[in-house]
Length: 578
Image 1 (cartoon, rainbow, N blue to C red):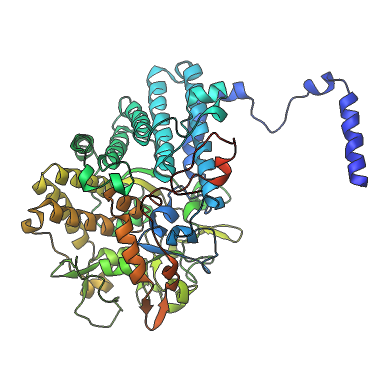
Image 2 (image 1 turned 180 degrees about the horizontal axis):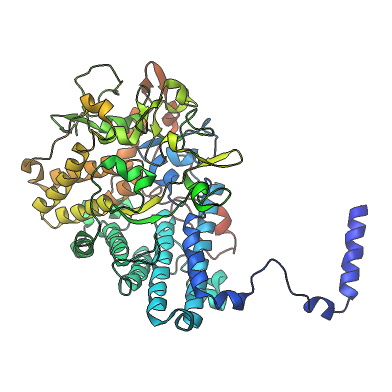
């Protein structure tokens, strides 16, 4: 009661004071709006900086939604209640209420707000401060960044409000509905963002690493058209029966630019995921990071999206999330150097160092999945054991390797949290080449598609001696013979398998399954088998007995509850969710 009386007295005193006493006092700790807009270069830098303003509860690389939600991995951590991501791995309990969904939506729109502000600043002061050429380039870059954020929102939530610089300037964002545009119309608007970038950006940028260029815009345009080419995302109207050949041709047209560009395959697959090879010819566009020792800051510009994904007991604060599945490990099996399409998952198998076996494996397994008895990220002094799993009775013993540096290179900390100075790939060369091969198959250009896929397999075959010589006895991989590309059905199977192995644990597997219209059949079969997983007598994954994916509902994530009711009646929910 005493506190309430004090507050009341203060309120009365303020209400009777002269207004001028307050109006003339400038605010502190706030950037003046006009001053900010008068510095367009700084506003563009702020838009770029937002690419890495992520956290484990709103990871912009979408690993819980693209990997945990797929057959590639289990959530990990201390148990099913550790974070709110468990519903994403079993689907049957997914609702609109997890705070992680709300944070992701909100933060991505914060990024879009920065882009809108940057465009206003460029319109008002760009030519004056930067010159006509640079101003035009910066406008293209910001459209690219805004398209990138909208692509993620559309990929996740389907029905989203389109808030651009006009809406922002007019302060009418609370009047924009999320069903104003159809799914295809929204994609066309995202395509428009990347076209705006493509039309003005140079192929190579020399004034700072990490900037978007024309080739990155072309690659993103190909990704947009490839997604649309399969249908509207819902299985009933998506898949091989809904292929749009014109859109597939767009994929080929835009990837023509990528093929003729400065980008290409990095010679060793393992090098792609080492920080010393960041921004190599494999990296078309990536979110930039740094280590505090390099940039002279307290904590560095770390990859906070992946902060949970370090191996338990290997790092000072490894929290053991993002755990590869047995199904994924089995998918790397080979027979005569080729995938075991039909029987890969008939038995539980895994290599153990020093134990001879007739089973052979695609070499990319050892670059992707950390396993007991093998060196962690190529370093024998940090060989993994079964002790390097936090909850093996729930999530097994495997760990993810791609998103972490080598242990000897150290780690970046913020109190009890750990993060890594690892660039986050948005588009890398072999990813885009696999998009191209996917489109070529649908355009009946089988030979060209086979060449791309075999080039990628050849790179994998040549990625043994440098980093994983200790696993050479387990590795066997061969190019696909021409007989595998005589029909679209067979060629598609090769392409889809190759995409899984090449891009495993890189945050996109679920979205691939959805694009191909096979998410329900693939995931429900996965749940049935993965719940019986064992490793050296330890069973795990039994929680999958409660898992089920429902076509016609689960293809997209629900609009977050807090967003749905922020302005009652403004937004509509995706079908199947409350």
